[in-house]
Length: 179
Image 1 (cartoon, helix red, strand yellow):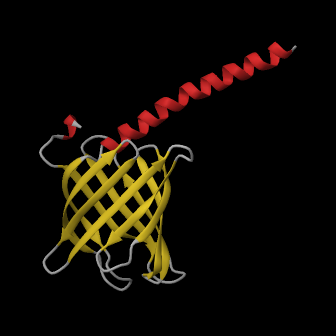
Image 2 (cartoon, rainbow, N blue to C red):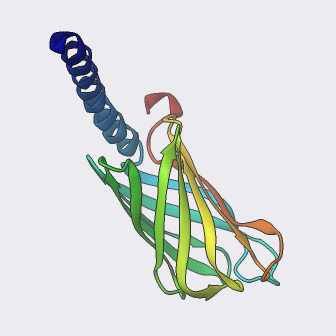
Image 3 (cartoon, helix red, strand yellow):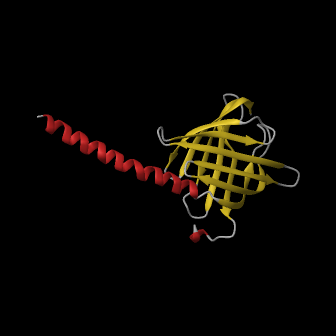
C-alpha cells in the first residue's frame, strides 16, 4: 500500500523538478533578447495637462541569467529625458522586482511578472507623479529585434488611465530576422 502512494508522488516530484529547469532557461533566453544597443521613437506625456511629445530614443540593454538593465535617453527639440529600468527575476516566486528612474522624478519601485513576451510591471513612485503614485509599465519583446515600452497612468487623480509613454525600439546594427 505504501508503494502505491509514494510511487506517484515521487513521479510527480521528479516531473515537476524536470520542468523547473527549462523555465529558468526560458527566462534567461527571454532576458537575452534585450541585450545590446537600441534606437527608435515614441511619445511621452510629461505632465497631466501636456500634449504628448514625439521623441527619438537611444538605449542600451544589459542582461544576466536573472537580470535586465535598460537605460537610455529620449529627446526632441527642447525636451530630453534619461530613463532606466533595472530588474531582477526571482525564480522561486517567478516575479520581477526592481527600480525605474526617469529624469526629474524620484526612483519608482517595479514589481510584476512575465506574461508571454511581455513584462507587466506595477510602478510605485515614493511621491505622486501626475496626481498619484501608481502606474503600469509593459515591456514587450517578441524576439524579432524590436521591443516596445509603454507606461499607462491616471494623469488626473481619479481620472481615466491613459498612455503616458509609448516607445518602439529596434536593435541597432541588426535586421529583425537576425534576432
